[in-house]
Length: 143
Image (cartoon, rainbow, N blue to C red; front, side, top):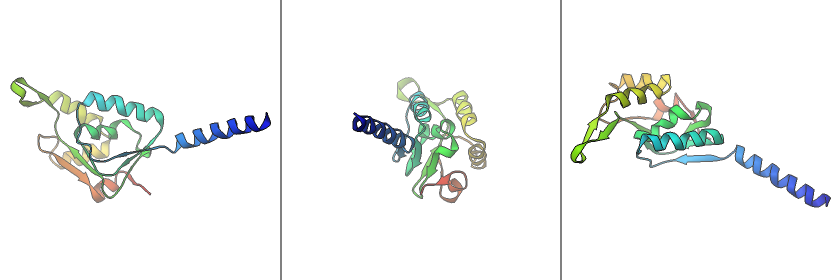
């Protein structure tokens, strides 16, 4: 009986330790619908997992910076964040700018990211990329 109790306690302890050190790696993410990313990242925030950005995280993917606490995000030398203005799919399948959504998106980002975006001319239809030393100055490197 004591052995069973000890095994159960050890299993629970290992499960808790594993959950507190869980990691999610982001790479090759071109984005998508903003709402889906917000929902996904709110679940990740609640889980307490560390987010490793290890490649492209573009468009709606960058909402991770607004949702996950900074101390839970790390970046590798491969990390590459792509930002652009929000848009809607209009009539006949054409995309059209959505200024209100762009302002909302911009306001969600942390101050240091907003400052960088502003220094690049703001959020426009053209993709701008944050990577390398500029990104590492804002987020801790992964070890």
